[in-house]
Amino acid sequence: AIEFADGFGVAFWHGTEVPIAWLRDKNTLDPRVVLTETNIERRRAGCEILTWARIIAELQPRVIDVDKDPTIGVLLEADLPDAPGSRFLKVLCGTGRTFAIPVPDDCDTALAANAATYGLEALDLRGLEART
Image (tube, rainbow, N blue to C red; front, side, top):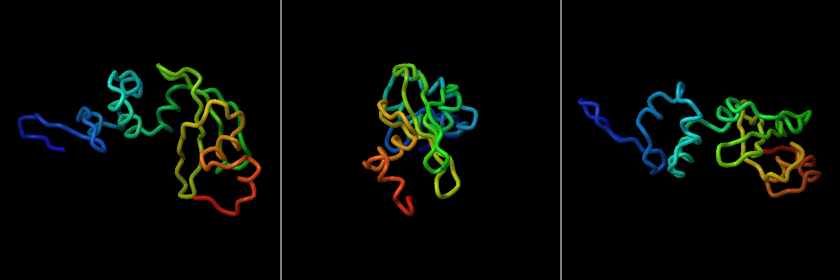
């Protein structure tokens, strides 16, 4: 938000105060620093700053399922400090970017996980012509 010439300053991410270094040096920010932050709102903001795709890659996730369609994605499981066995869907967006999205732990396939993000049944998702 502001930094003075003497180095003092404060930074915010969508209304949550975060260390200035998290925004200034986000390419070198260690995901373990964010994941072990005791303030849950600051931890949430840090995960948004880093992106779940980067955090999950650092956690060496287990592959649960891979769909042949990269826009459906890959279902992964990773152990977060306070939530072992958390599931994430790594997907290719229509813009060409890769995202990782937290999904319900009861999803057993990438298709089911992707459908859950839309509130659909897995078979209904395959019938869609286009998604954004």
